Length: 436
Figure 1 (cartoon, rainbow, N blue to C red):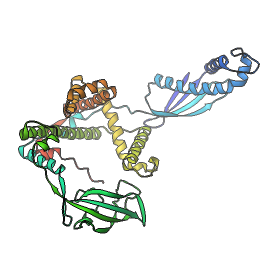
Figure 2 (figure 1 turned 90 degrees about the vertical axis):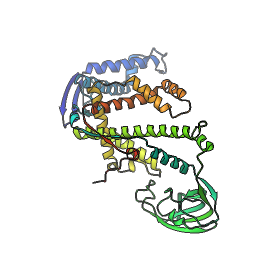
Figure 3 (figure 1 turned 180 degrees about the vertical axis):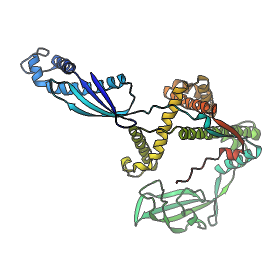
Figure 4 (figure 1 turned 135 degrees about the vertical axis):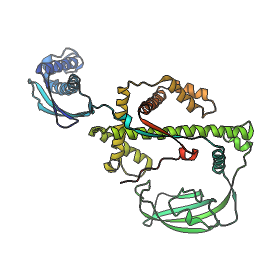
């Protein structure tokens, strides 16, 4: 087999492969012999059909099948011999495809970039340090009370925080639109559950009152078919209920699985959960800085095939999340290219760090992570046992642990400074940078 390789760009390769005619004929004959054993031809017993008849009837199909299989097999033989690492499937172009002659074809494909991860010492990381103070715990208890607010009927006009029971019908261009109507739905004013202006438009309404709200869907509304459009909602208020916060008592504690010990044990349980959240928030912010640093220090070119595959995955996710009758390929690729590029580049860099530093998932850390996740359940031992019996879940945990080990490897070499902050600041989500 003859092979020649041409680099047409940084990542694209054009490989010409020649396959001897003898190998092709051997593969064709092998397929014809297999066909002869099972072929049913009138006038002949099964397995006794002359090869000349078999060739006459089945040779064209056998040759096409053999050529297809040979192209696939010889392509992977060639890339292995040339020590190439293809990214995606090749585009195959036959150059010589005649019976009795050598097969010659050209395979054009991209390869994974070859690089070494560098610049770890120049990555600056700010690692937050925080504790759960008593004031933070008190504030969390109030949040939990508000989340479990009870509503009691009120014979007055609706105020912020009240729960209304409403019927409504929404129209766009005078036509009722899908998902824009509901009956006996409950809405807390100020919850931000509805589009801007809907809840404000019901302040001061009383039970039995009907209001017409003329609103506009946000330009970034999740249903792309409604985004930016004007709409009219006819809303009938059937009931108004005022909020009442629950007392910190045994009934309330039981809602969170604390059935003994009273307020002290409840506070201890809430503090433990807050500390878990704090650890995860700090870890996540450190990880984001590490990944940003790796990206900045290691600019690499991305195979177009990998980028296209990731864009398509993000398109499908967008349709699944936002709904509507739109198809994934109808969404412009440029909407997802930046996010897709970041994912692909980070995937390549992280994989190279794993290879470069010979990292493997640490079994002790895998078990520690499973135990921490299981601690949020009432019977953690059963959860741990379930993980260890589920190969798919175990592999997912190992992947997370391996990524954490990548972060630790970078931290061991990066410029890390610690900063003391409040609990609230530590768990606050990082705001996305404004678009340029």
